Length: 278
Ligand SMILES: Nc1ncnc2c1ncn2[C@@H]1O[C@H](COP(=O)(O)OP(=O)(O)OP(=O)(O)O)[C@@H](O)[C@H]1O
Ligand SMILES: [Mg+2]
Image (cartoon, rainbow, N blue to C red; front, side, top):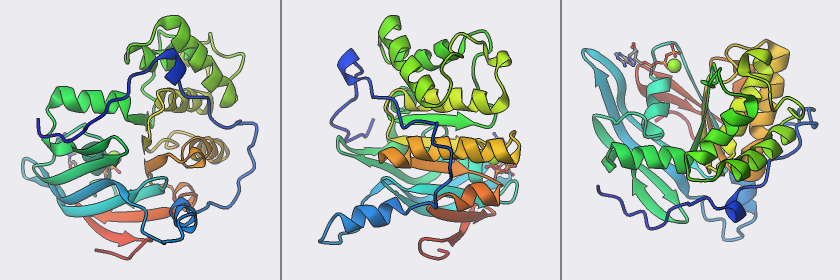
């Protein structure tokens, strides 16, 4: 393992993060640029450091090139939409950034207050721990466990990090309530609408206090009104709380809600609203 990470997040009852903002707030304000606000708070106007830094990533599957020398910095507190045609490498990029798959070459560094971690140098157990403790995930279908209740689906993320069931369920109930799901805690996933199930997935991604949330087409299975609501909940609870959101989407409306849009083609970055194509 070649990690310079110096700290680790252990969840104790005192450390359970407070639930996010109220989901009752469903009006859709214009997206703000968290990086710009962060810069405004630092008179020295030093650039906001990258929380995730990817350098010349390549990834091939057999004869298919999924990533081809891709370089990208994601700043703390920013919301980044990753767009591109089917097969352009969006999911592969997200999986590499999140330590789900390893690139064939290139570097991925996570920079937090606890130190810098070379994600591409971690072994499977190191990456698994990083995913559990530092990252949250929301996928198109939520990947929720149908046999468990909404509450249990959220609490399991904390229990995997060592928290006892009672404390985990208390924290999870707070998150469900804050995301507009009060009274639905004991429902199984099949008893929820698509939008409600995605809120459970968002609560599960957030309950550990992860600083970076990755979402792969989180609204892909939703109608446009529900999609807007879920995106609002996702933004409120991430960048609205100074967390970082990386969201893969095919939906222009979803992308337009993010502070920054990057475009991929054939595994390369071909557009970046924050600084042009590389
Ligand atoms: N596990 C895998 N095995 C083989 N090929 C893969 C694998 N994962 C991805 N690929 C290939 O790599 C390329 C990029 O795939 P990726 O899933 O990153 O695309 P994407 O941009 O997310 O597409 P979509 O919008 O359809 O989800 C594609 O050609 C895909 O077929
Ligand atoms: Mg994909």
